[in-house]
Length: 129
Image (cartoon, rainbow, N blue to C red; front, side, top):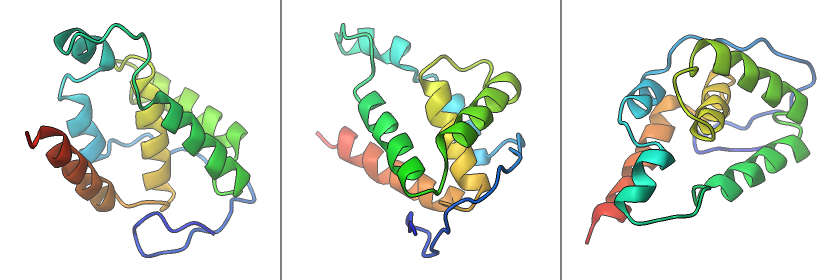
């Protein structure tokens, strides 16, 4: 069981679930910020092709699959569907990140409000200098 900050334990998935492509406000706001790695890296003089959070993203994939909360095949199918419908205008790897967050929210693994609170805390830490 996983508790992702929404005070509710999530049971491992036992069957494939359909993905709900409906827009999620916190993720739509994130898409509209214009902060893809391709846009931000040159501003900060970073030349590495991959964003620093990409390793954590893959580790999250592995942890969710290992716990049975979001099996890899389901996650990839949801990602493919969301990439075609909801996040087609977003570059990779941001599209993977948004698809994972979208899937986690629609399945109740984390709430949109909990994700938004975490994003605000992280943004505050990064901008307090």
